[in-house]
Image 1 (cartoon, rainbow, N blue to C red):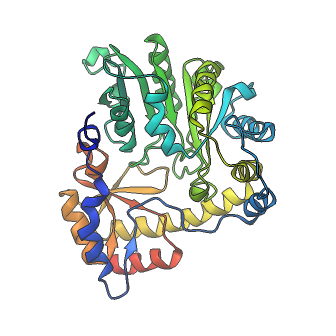
Image 2: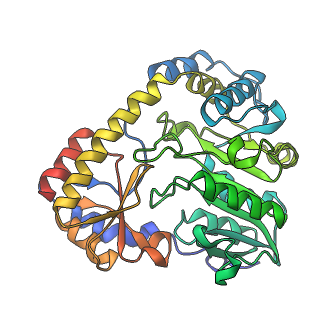
Length: 372
């Protein structure tokens, strides 16, 4: 059996530790803008739902309660425009990261199969392919089907195609036309398309669209699955609350596999998700917090000589000073500000840094003052 180090890439965040130490030495303390972990309170109505379900001595089901499935299908119809979803079109999962990491394995992929993901992307897409011992390739979304330009993605052996809009790390949002073309291309070649839409409710300069929208998928969910998380919209990263929606045949197979693996969301968390998906007010309030932090950080970075690209959605600003990302990381660390180097997300990000908006108002204000 091969060593773990042979199967997986080096854990990238370990490389950031010396810069974290530098930033932490700032007299006024570190401003950590390197990770996208929520810092604001869990909304009270969600906490109350969790507490009310705390006396749950029995095992929960992998498929979730009927109330949870109703909440998911209702939210998808209301927020994504995905009509006609039944309970067979949805599946709760234990946070979206475990799904990304283990989906190729659960789909039965292995040597000879290929997983594709954007050339600037969340590193766990690659990890998932490696865990399954499948091949992995990257692509440019805008040229995925552009055979005339010689840049089309080769469908040979391709079994799983990841989309990510809004993007982590760039915040780029794919248009309806772009999504429609990719869905059509994947269906034409018999490739399962899985769209990571965890930042969909955090659009700033664009209104993100789901692949489940009828204008994109034509009202059919065949061959497509969307991934959604409550970590960002509802501050539930600590609850591990997420779900899938889409092709009933794909989700049915995953349900059986996940039953055998015991991959079940806790009963109190299921109750909390029902409350969270049924309430839009707390999402609006959290968006307002992030919008204010985004404006403050964006203006300060621009004033400090940065250029911002994309970043029309999500919880990040994709920023550059047209130098090595590590030089930028070092510069900001000297100001007590920690950010993520762009090459964590692919070689194409080598001149960029990802700046998260997930810090308290007080820490964001400190970062703004230092940049000015």
